Length: 184
Image (cartoon, rainbow, N blue to C red; front, side, top):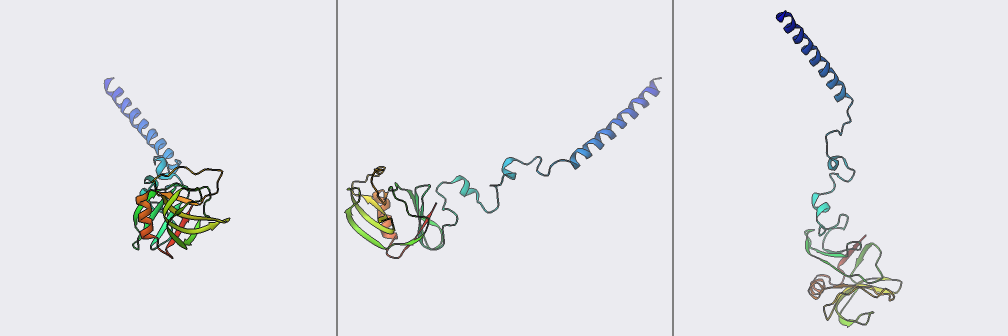
């Protein structure tokens, strides 16, 4: 009897393997194409057009910010990039915007002043103006005392404040006619 029960168990095991194999095949044929992939592999933001640097580095030059030598100003990030002719940022830094923003678009440096008093009454230097919005001049500047306080919301100011070192770098880079690209 031992021989016949061994044959029976072997036949039963073989039959079970066939059934499991068939069910596995059926399940794989009906599985979604993205099963087993991570969320990052299938999310709509994970596309070939975005580099990993753009997703992880807040200092990365924004996409769609133009070409050639230019100043790029990102309104949402309150950040500026001084971009050389090779398309690479030579310098990037945070700024403190005024209460009036320029519209996104392309501008050129139209006027410059070495030292003046800002519309907020603060002595400023290295003023590089590029736009005018509703009668308010928009430009980059550095407070002579080095401060970058938040602007008074009750006043219309177009000064985008930089540190003194960043203001000096902007002054050297952004000469008359230099392209300024403002992105959202």
